[in-house]
Length: 417
Image: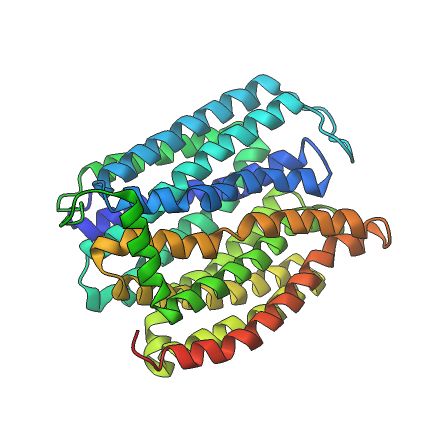
């Protein structure tokens, strides 16, 4: 068992992200076993992502008031309970009926899964905000790029390399298993975080007043143009990314004719690129500087989204995702490290939550847009073409975003913030 606080923190994050990776396959694949309607399928990941829009601001205020370690422990406990409830509900509903093209084969199970996903999403908002604001209390600020890169590499091993493949194999063996496995992963993370020692509650110099505290967060973000640019760029990028990833579920099943195991392996292969990006991100930033690095990583998204739609084989799709995730992790290394270094600790929770409200609040819109685009396209073009339409729309949007963001990023990093 590691005794170094950073190592314990990383291992705990690895376990929770292993659970997230398992859930990446489990939530969407289970929804596709209840309905073939892409809009209804998208409601499950919407339930996971909508809490970022609804609870990001309260999470920021609470993070700047609470012991961040205790907040992480409570949220991981809530997620463990939600996954246990989901596992029981799935087990009681077996065997599942054939999913209809329209409507839901088991509405009760579908709504239970939506509720469980919503609880997991709410807990994730508070937990992730607390964890990201806690890291600068564990490592020196001059090592943030390196520490973030190492942390994200470990998280990606669980979230995108091992987790999706494991989730797919667990689904193939027994449908409730991935949900039960996730509950145990969160319990393991709780055990690791309990052992962390240190001071994880921010200093308070004034009486508590949530209106004043929220105003301070808005004021800081309002005076930081580069932070605002990064937040808006990340928000629209996340919108396009979510359009692609939810559309990928039916594209893999119907256009490529693959099963859950192959889908999990494709997602896992993409993680290899992300892991390399996490390890090499600080070196790339050191060579080219944060501005050029961010510019080129952003601009690379458009051809990646287009390639995801057009590559003809699962091997080519896996390679495309690997390249795409490499660029995404390098972008994250630039943006998050800048944010952690720039924002004072006593404001980090609030400003971080406002930033993530802009950056993550767009995800549910992307998920719903993807389902709507497929549903509408289905009326005018063949089904196989309709299923790749979200990729084409996302590629065009990412190209526009890359062109517009190029100047803002180049100008922003050159000015003191």
